[in-house]
Length: 308
Image (cartoon, rainbow, N blue to C red; front, side):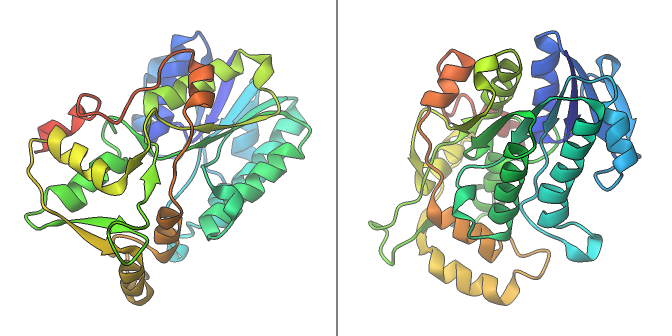
């Protein structure tokens, strides 16, 4: 099957390319000019240069394809650079839907995120509106809502690498967030899901008509609280780390003052989503990939060790 990918050169995108090729599909990637060197297994992919703002580029991407995967998202806006949730996570989806309808590409797979239905933040609102646009498009859709995705970033960035860089490696205590004012209350639960498993879910869904019209939450096999995630990252990198509890409300106060600065590590929206937690039952993922999901274990975090 010829499959177009929008968002095929980033962290998850590279694994999507691998999973599609391994199942015999033919990927076509939309790539920003000057970024063709980021294409994974480029000799086996067709590349169309362009960006999300170009209807012509999106139409060229979809030419000859039978399905399209939209795998684009940002965790932070940079309005002065033209990078916004509205453009990246919603308007781009609408352009893709219109191009698919025009060129007879009937199948679309959308990367969303767990918890977007809460619509509390700009990130969630635009992701949720994109889901609604896909559902109302008349296309044969499948939507995926993963928890936090981890795995070897292969030169990009992902959650465990960022936590190691920002909290574990520095010679100061790490921060263990919780939502209450006491550490024993308000533990933040997450279900980290391995990027290989997410990519396999997409690739398997393409071949399974039963996934059409479905929305899947994708989570790993464990519900871990924030502090336990930090402990496992420390263990995987051979670090002994003191972790000090901190209410998210205290961090939000700092974000209110400084999150407009590019160097500030988190935004108020990110902290709002973190406080809501990100725990997901692994059943839907394991049914899609037909095996046990990979845990957030020291073994599966081994890619962090060379950085220590």
